[in-house]
Length: 433
Image 1: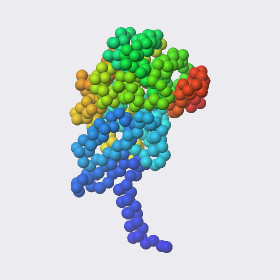
Image 2: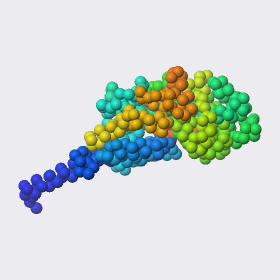
Image 3: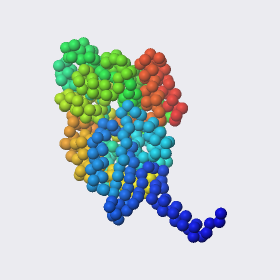
Image 4: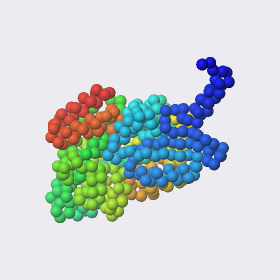
């Protein structure tokens, strides 16, 4: 059928109009309309996909506050984390064609995996305010591609009252031998202290030991540098035996069976209820403890995992916010505006400190307002420079949980030896670098 010039022009105009009303990129957000109630501005929708379940409600409240102040912006928040592997679910979401406009990456390896859909962040107040060193993991060729969530630290959270009753000084637990002696003391006093066990080792949560335990013992090998870990073709596990002893200690003195213990049982059912004296976790666990047992939360402290005779607190940026380069330009700008609001506006900073309970990764915060004792201690270690790096963010994709974590589970269940677990992990690293 022959199409007239008028018909062709009409069809072309229609296509252009429809295209302008939709999303020309691959991400899920959109720009449409003339703004609220016929105004002159555009209405922007941002699809945001984030990993931190611990502050889900508080974060959604901040989003609602931002939407109220910016009525032409709608932010759809989806939170996936906790017992789920955020990285794997993000890849599935992308594969389904529902790409978020804002999502999270952990560092250089995640950037490498997603670099084709990550936009550079320019003219950002949050980038300008980020503390020295916090942008290194997301800076490529002098261009910044993400903004940090916060600073976090992890180690052994302990009940101060239980330690005091047992006559244990946490400041003296600076070697693995010191820690073992304290564990033996607590184990011998379980009935007197009202404990079910010394530890709650969450064997079901591979990220706890696949990311954090391994990172503490691999950090010296990579000079505390996530970039050095990312650039390394091999991993030697120079402190393999000490790592084995540390995991064995937790497993043997833990509430059983460890392979069915999850994060909720570890933090909420056992530690918060004073059924165990210690757990390996970070300051992100504080809100969960406080919600169940405020007195226990206030009476908690945190010590570093002793490694190679040193006692350094592992402190790092857990994740970065990044913007999808496939989103409309206006959606990208709206995404950066929201991130700037969260971390640099007076209202946002108040929420970050007092509702999120974050250790800020940005300048111009009143750090005296850091409200919980775990974050206070971690911040003090940071101020003193007595910290180690989060090198797990530089591991090859799939190494921490699917490989090392899975091998540790097999070791705990007796299916493989420790030597096999280490050899399997070394081989995976080399094959995937």
